Length: 223
Image 1 (cartoon, rainbow, N blue to C red):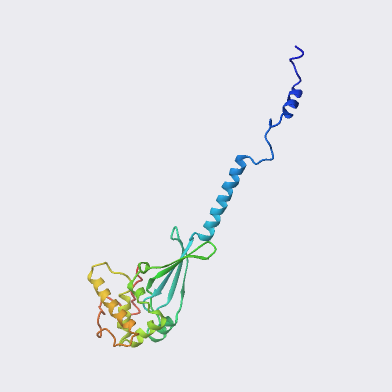
Image 2 (image 1 turned 135 degrees about the horizontal axis):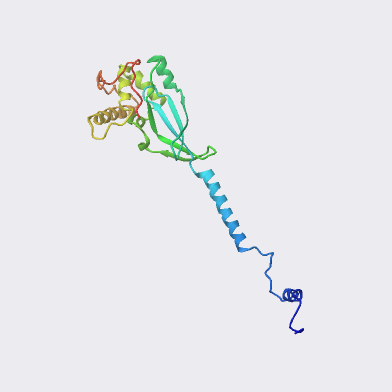
């Protein structure tokens, strides 16, 4: 009986002396290694999100009447407006001084936009005609040509009315859309020839009573 019973401490000492009986505690455990991998993946995804995901979108507008610039900054996912501001241009200053001192701007969205990350760095630029909210943006007048259009037209009232008719898209196939296409086609050809040809419209053409030209009763901005 004495030979069979042993001290528990002696049994523990004997197991510690057997090679390979205990695991090496200095080696990394599988669970710890998995946590490190997950942490590295999450940090990498977070950095990619911060630097490459478009958080803020900037869209650009131009007044169809005078050519003043308007910019809107929005949250890309939800479309929430963060800020908006106007910037006078050479053509808007000229229009104010020579045609109308005061008028209500009619903003037309251009076919260009920029997407920025949370640090304000550009991560995506788009140049698509489908982004424009009216045929006016497709004319690519610029400040100089916008001024010259008024200067070379016989009547600035008619020029203003023509530009306003291009401020937003009429329904496809409608009679109004056909008028838009005709106006755009003539202005495009005239602009492409550096506006050297004669004014491509008859006096008072396309100026209808329903198109306001009185600065005290301006048209509303298109949606």
